Picture 1 (cartoon, one colour):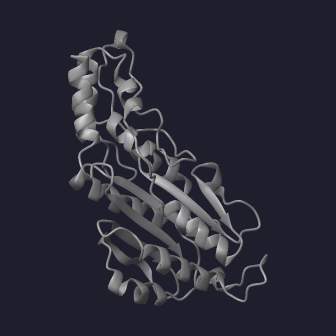
Picture 2 (cartoon, rainbow, N blue to C red; picture 1 turned 180 degrees about the horizontal axis):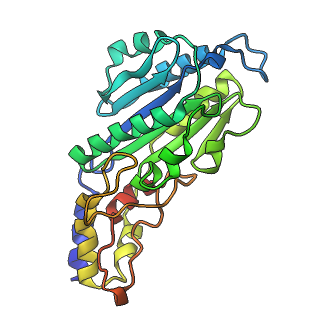
Length: 285
């Protein structure tokens, strides 16, 4: 039975596209302060100009099968600049260049909107990588804490979240909660965007994946393998449906979300379902 379970896991994990589908939403800060120049760099370029250049260059290089969305708050755009879907490279540059800085920094609202779009797509696609990337130069002017880390918040849903702080005097509050990079120049901003978009490369024989299920009783391991469809895709702030567990973990520096996924509830309590081992493996990469 152990070998059968390993074979099933191997088949699932090596199915083409199982963990390769990238689904990305960029929360793009277009507030008024993005019109300022970098304070620690001699470059005569504004933060907005640098952000546009980095996003146009690197988002245009995404694989063709990537689903991309860009949500922005600015002087002339507040909401979806690019709806989450297949990358439209022909119009991407024009859409990003159309943003003009202005206004405040309501990160909480737009983080929530971006995350909900990813959850809706995950409910349809089931598998893949779902990432929320935040590019901002200031603290949120609204409540970003509750949508991110509150009950049934973004991190509890197993989404990847990464943030880039653009020319900030100190680390953003998000730095204590999600993987975070500082960008104090146009070059550093381009590098930071590139890093958060990069996919893990290299071969994996999945031996670590086998180790996850090897010690488990067969019925427990089988329950874990069938739990993939039971992830929490309810909107941010809403309680998961009956029988679906919500992951209360937080993002790590490697982009892994919820390292508690795959931990088995005590056999003495009679719980045999390990929620999301396969999602844990995908997010671990």
